[in-house]
Length: 409
Picture: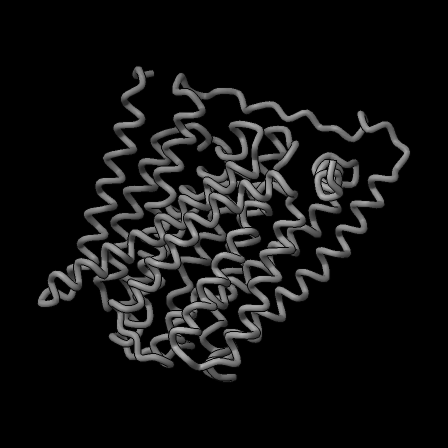
């Protein structure tokens, strides 16, 4: 057994796991801050540094998203085979190096190359964090661990997006490189410290049987098999990120229509992220949505309506409620995908990789469809939005097909 594999066994099942996992949540929060600061504000950077318009940012978002889909699938397999700590260290080091190098270059194509390499680095991290906090947990604690994980990344991500625009306005465009790099270096330092603590757990003299928590699948609430819910969530989540990443990549243009600076765009267009984070807290303490199709379907329908309002409206009293609705619906869809990924099956690293790959696919296809529509119908500025709405409706239909191909309960 490798050192990382041994370390995983202790941090997953050790009697001090809650304390050790708390440190893992700190690392996750740093990773979320760093990746949100960079990957969400990269569209403002390309708009200001290289004069990218909405269509060009859509194409870049599509390319990075599809790269993330492929990379996350293999990143999850890597984490499962070689260890969650090793995967997190490699991913963090790659991103930090790319951010530091990227801060010193100005050539557009070389900068875009490092954007891609940094994306590959990110693919090593998220599935590993998900499996790290979920492995070996019984159903009651799994719900809690996934909830804490969700709130950590969503809360820190919302904070990053809220403050990122103000930081760029005050310190300049290059701040989007320096701050994430510093956060990732701190994450690496904490990770090495945590590794040492885990190795100390390995030398404990307690009977290993005392440290094992036997995880059992959650009791079924419906005649529909759990794997069907897992499949439905894996379908819904990429469509959710299709909508979310379309909003993120077009935010600089939406902000321009409202005459907002990067700072105010961050303030206003981060509302749905805070709503998503708060919804994760609610869903953590209210598990009755588990294995209930009506909640997943309602959240999906809400997402479609709110997505359309956000991209079409220029009035804040329509925009803000729509952001609240979008945040809650995205939270339930994401929570479903991750919870079912961790609850169904034993290869949590691989399942986390599939979960993240689905996110990457949605993040890529949404902007790709929008950019294609805007290229094909330049005389209709809203063609990209309508194309994405149409794609979301197709996804909703797939959910119902998956659900009702089973025998009605």
